[in-house]
Image 1 (cartoon, rainbow, N blue to C red):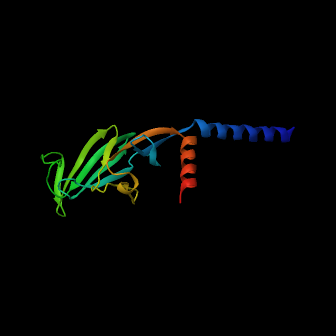
Image 2 (cartoon, one colour):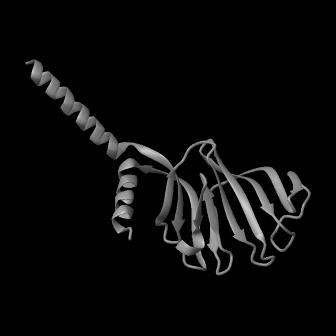
Image 3 (cartoon, rainbow, N blue to C red):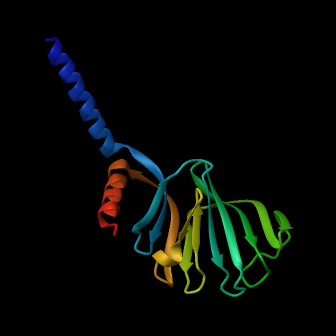
Length: 170
């Protein structure tokens, strides 16, 4: 009788683990292509910081935009650029300064639903997170749109995408 009860406990725990794998969800920071396919993902957490860099299409100078996840939302928190030009900030607002010949605007704290990007031919969009830099312009076709977003997804689907990526790697 003692063996049966241990066996029952093991079976019940195993069933609970398997069921939770299909039902539990995770919050993710994702990059989606124009067809809403997830091209990149990482587990989301509060205070996670990342940046998007690109060459400004008119001024041809580097621009960096800095973001943070706070309370499960995306926030633009700062920008850094080298010169004024079309489409670049010019108003005296937020906490702005000039450091190392770069204009910096900090303490922006603007909440965003998602971050839309148009990957241009010469803009060389980059995504920087946790010390890793991803060259979006080499992964996504020029003139294509991508969206950086926070989503909730089931652990099973996350695992499935990882398996597919692993199997299709060169």
